[in-house]
Image (cartoon, rainbow, N blue to C red; front, side):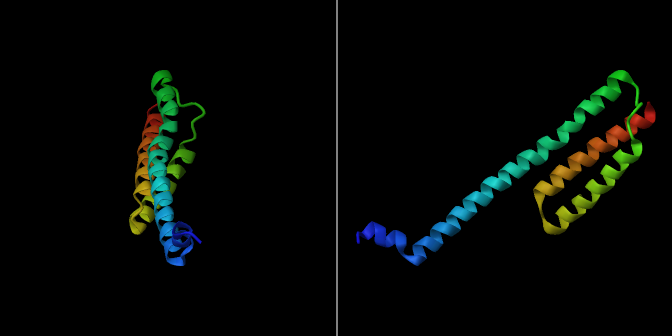
Length: 108
């Protein structure tokens, strides 16, 4: 058995490799979650744009958007309790945009 294969097959080295690999995977997933957390709420922008341009809220369910705000608020609290930045940022952005939609729907 060569020294390289012996070192690779040593349980301690495999454990260190698995820990390092796991940490890198988690870091990548965390970064992706942050990116998605910022980008996903932007899907509400077409609704905001439509409300501003048409000045017509026909078909916009205020109740549904208020319920979305309540749901996002719960997730913000959960994120704070668990110190999960991606959850906090994602749901804070959702809540802000949802609030804007409700406000515009009430205005128009």
